[in-house]
Image (tube, rainbow, N blue to C red; front, side):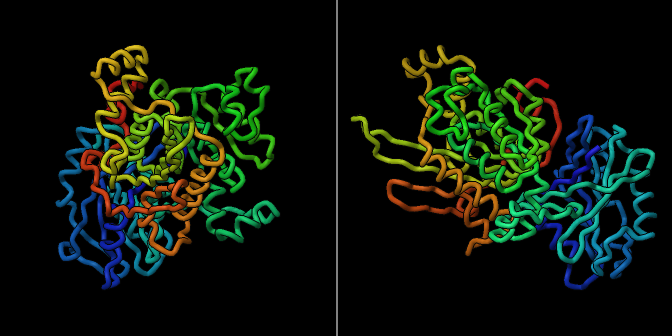
Amino acid sequence: MELQLRISGFHYEILERHLLPADGREAVAVALCGRFHDSESEYLLIYDLTLIPHDQCISREPDLLHWSTERIQHYFEKISKNDFALLKIHSHPGGHEKFSRTDNISDHEFFDSAFGWSMSDKPHASAVMLPDGKIFGRFFFNDLHHEPIDKISIAGDTVKQFTGSINIDNSDFALRTIQAFGELTYQSLSKMTVGVVGCSGTGSPVIEQLVRLGIRKLVLIDPDIVERKNLNRILNTTNEDAEKEKPKVLAIADAIIKIGLSTIVDSRQVNLYDDVDALKALIKCDVIFGCMDSVDGRHLLNQLSSFYLLPYFDLGVKLEADGLGGINKICGSVHYLQPGKSSLITRGVYTTEDLRASSQYRKNPKEFESLRKNAYIKNVNVNNPAVISVNMQVASHAVNEFLNRIHPFKTEQPSSYAVSTIDITEGCIVNSDESDFKEDLYLKKETGRGDMVPFIEMSELIV
């Protein structure tokens, strides 16, 4: 059973300020958590946060803390009616990297009470933040035994993960990546699972780069087969693949296996709207790359990112024809979307009308054309092909931005690169800061909500 705790960047910043005050004494907070649960995994996702004020604690010392649960009574009531979890998190200002005897007694009392209120027998969790911001923790089960958390992830301006150490690959393969981006970056990559949705234009070169950077596992999703027209942009595909109508995900998976770096590949020839199991595979990823040109597909991933606290890179390419067989403008965009902040809608990438039109096209292409011709529905771009040189430039920019989020190396703060618009015609890159965009108030309200019915509040997705 894999045990994970996920925290959005804005909740992590709040916790860091509260739990590590200047007075050097312990502090505590309690979070209401959404869940992701299946036969192999238990994830807790911070959904709401209550800070226990320093001056309302019964006593606070550098290595001791007593406090009343009165302030979180509303959480006990919520877990009695809904399948939420509680996370108790406090600090060790002295840097002690283990739960103390006092912690053990306190946790036992707290979770004994929590399970008395809970509507289910699913686990709750306790965690500790250290002075450097690192977090470790454990899950408590209904018989009050506990197990260590395997991974704690932060999806914010940067992508942080707190896990156990692994042996670094000292081979020639790893050396160049370590030299360029550092040992910690390579170590992070070698533990990660990354989802790529759309394995054609930009998706193919993204996948190629991730494999050669040493990513541990890839989840590849694309419903289509290789066609001859795809050979101008899908790396490693052949005319034989097109003749055999080989699924794109399998053609790419075969190429990854031939590279021989022991990359684990989970290939799924499905449409996301038709396969909730594929969405659940993406939930288990550490990062998602969306390499699609459909509005409803991008919207779905943005929604999934918020509900399950996943960092999401959205890639787009646009070619504007002059009507005479030439091109007026070639540009691409890379959006980094973090849970609880702006969304593709608040950034103006598409409108709700575009979303409705794209959904109509997916469900019934013939009716869509009829509605469009009769001006009942706005036309949207449903097939925007590009060529390999453009796709590779956009894909490389996205992968470098991914690396910058793991271990920042650019001159400005990572938040300065929320959006990069790559104008190939003009020969420039324009970057936009996260603060340039409005928060998506609906998605912020659902950040960390996790499992619910209907799935991610989309009734057409049947679990």
